[in-house]
Length: 243
Ligand code: 16G
Image 1 (cartoon, protein in one colour):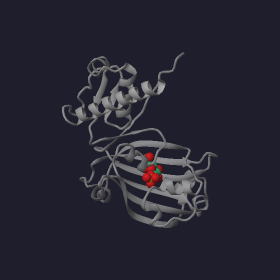
Image 2 (spheres, rainbow, N blue to C red; image 1 turned 90 degrees about the vertical axis):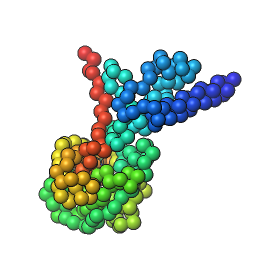
Image 3 (spheres, protein in one colour; image 1 turned 120 degrees about the horizontal axis):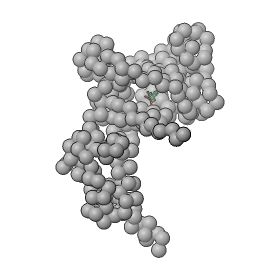
Image 4 (tube, rainbow, N blue to C red; image 1 turned 60 degrees about the vertical axis):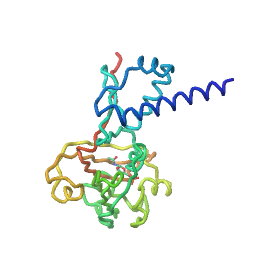
């Protein structure tokens, strides 16, 4: 009994989700409002919970976005919305059904230097692997990413290892990014970044500086990512404090 009704609910969810995805791809344009919850309940003969589940899934996939008090709208597919969960570039892209890829621009062992050493709590002379990559989504350049990793904490890296997900490589070595301090700021791209990203020099970009820590609070990565502002944004849920 329970299984049959469970299956029925799952089937209704899938049918509604598929119908909405099709509608988003065909009839609706970016920033158009999605039909209201009540309308969807009536049209598809499903419960409110099913509607919320299907719309929630579309939101997770970045296909729609919610505006507080105004409703749910079709997202602009040219923009990737990044939540503030600690995820990797590869995870972000895959969750949006895009294929992540990288072009390695530099992989060298260098002394940390004063600025990186301060972030990673190392001595300035300590060895770090410097990895600079162009990150792509479905073949389109999305971001230029530079990371500095303390070799004494994460081990040696080679080109083959950083061609895929760096966080997967770290996980295989038992290094698990747990939390990070991030600063997001506005910037413009220089000539080199512009050529890599396929935009004009001085185009707007989002710069994200991240220091990543493992579960014990030890810094394992310093990263600086420059994202094309026309293809990327950050989504933050803010909650009002109750007195
Ligand atoms: C994200 C991280 C970056 C990390 C990379 C790993 C931000 C701002 N930066 O781009 O610090 O090195 O993911 O991605 O989120 P990967 O596992 O796909 O190589």
